[in-house]
Image 1: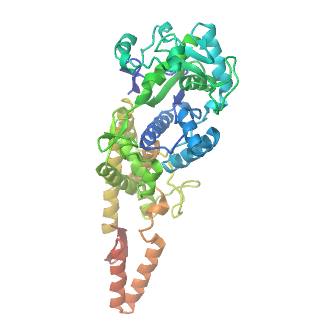
Image 2: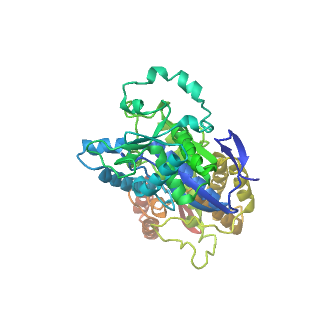
Image 3: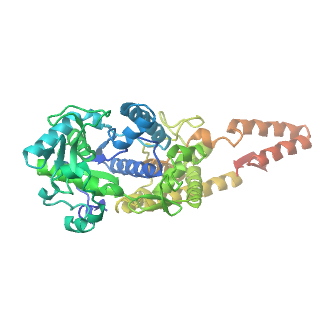
Length: 497
């Protein structure tokens, strides 16, 4: 099945065709760095991380660019409150961004351009707009004349006449910026410097760029005039992405992007997330509560990426339970591989090694599951559908593990189980779901597999010495810690409850 994507620009689902065969140029409108990232950022970054991973999985070479907006009124306001500088605030929250995303397992982009590092490209683009009649100066500011771009509104579906009808009550005619504009809908490409603010020299005087021109310039500088995928949150469709199109296409005469993809918003208990409502949750707050980062990824991926998603205690609890199921499947090879006689070969994952991740590289896999996964995900990145394949594999591996523990053998051949496990590891890696061996081989008080085996040996010695009280004490102690012992003629087996 061919990959098809819902294109916001055309309002329909279309087959995915790249500008250059086998290669994808993808740009994601990143964060404005004035505060810690919240759940909305988590959803967007996870979605586009997995989109990129999936495109690579099906054979594309992806160049993935994500920007940082490091010039903005919110950054300046925070710097003023903290008696700091815009640069210091931006640097601090960029650092925090990378810390948070690393905890969520987000792969780093190929490049992270910053507006302050793209000033030449920004000014060059404004100059070209001016030469083509799509920019006019006004007392140190520079504005874009929206009505001159005949296709304005094609992304959002908004019409200027409709917006004008409802705008009369919201216009402040005394606003100095409003008085500079030739038309109320015109937007700023360059803003004249105000006292005490950082500013850059330009042909129009000292100042700083408008928000929209920053992304147009960064896309062009890093990826060229036209890209394959432009991604971002649904809240950016208008005016940000609409204005990007107007700016870029007025200069180049080419489409800015062939596919515009937008993720849905995050609500908290049915309400829009906001600080005023007291339901504003940052990524680090959530993870510091003890929520597993992989449960957060799973929570995000259980919803179709374009739809709104509601964060509730029940939803994160369900995601946590779901992650435990997949996690058990991912750890199947670690727990039972040796017992099943698997040969992992040189350079593969060394069983018994702690504090590493199970590898997400591809192995020889079961084609049927791969085909089913691709068939469903190719339908506009249907990751919830793809998860059903992972759950099926994980539940079967868990069942086989229980049979192996209780009966000492499995119903399915070791080779087939190995293929199923490797398929699960591969597909989980596509979704960025990875289990940490160290986490999974300890109980809550830090008891490791080796420590459990030691206590079982101590119990065996107690039984040989007919010290049944000590034997029972060790068994009960392990049971209290979630470890069940199964005695048989072949010895003692154990499993975690």
